[in-house]
Amino acid sequence: MRRLPLSMLLLLFLLPGAKSVLGESQVIRGNRGNQLLGVRIGLLHYTSSDKQTYPEGVVFSGAIENGFVAEAFYNYYFLDQLGLEISLGNANRGDIVFESDSIGRLFGAASVYPIAVGLKLTPLSGIVRDHYQPFLSAGGALVITRELFEGGYLTNPYDYYDLSTKSKTDVGWWVGGGFESYVSSTICVHSSLTYYGIDYSEPIAGNKDHSGYRLAFGIAYIFRKK
Image: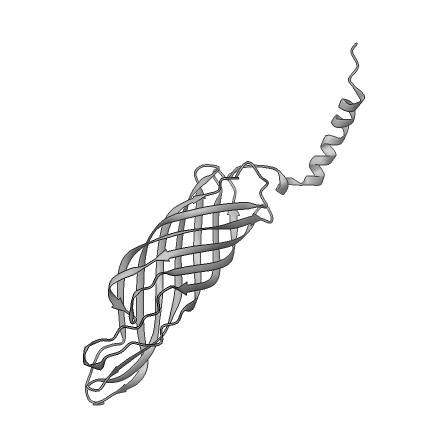
C-alpha cells in the first residue's frame, strides 16, 4: 500500500483545528441573498448657502453649511457583488427668517428629506472575508424640502398670513462609497461618504441649491440567506 507523505498527514491533522480557530464569521462567502436593515447618522455639508432676496424686502436667512442628518436604509443583494439600496433621510437645513414691513417677522427651521433608491456594488464580496467590504453606490432621489415657521410677530396682529408650513418636491441624484464590516454573523457597521445633487427650479428655505456631501456612520442588522 502506498503511504501518504508526512506533510499530507500533518495537513489533514491541522485542518479541522484551523477552521475552528478562524471561526464561522471569517469564512469567505458572498453577499447573494443577504439583507441589511440599519440606521446611520452624520453631517451633510451643503456646497451652496447663498441667500435669496425677494421682492418687497422679504428675506430668508440663516441657512447653515453643515446640518445633522439621520437615515434609515435597506439593502438587498440579488448578486454577490450587486444589490439594491433604499434610504429615507432627514437633514437639517438651518434656521430661517421671514421679514417684511407689511407682514412682520417670522422665524422657524428648514429640513431636507431625501428618499433615495439606487444600486450598491461590493466588488470584493466572495473574495475577501466578511469583515472588510468596500462598496460604491449611486442612484436617484425624490427630495422634499420643508420650511416650518414656529414663532414671530405680525405688523398688524389682527391680520392673518399663513406661513406656517411650506414645502417643495424635486428629483435629485446621488453617488457615494464607503466601507462595511461584518463584525458578527448578524451585525454590520457602516461608514460612507455620499454626494447629493439637489437643485430646485425655485427657492425653498432661501435657496435653490441644496446639494452637498454627507458623511455618515451607522449600524445594520444582517438577515442572512439560509
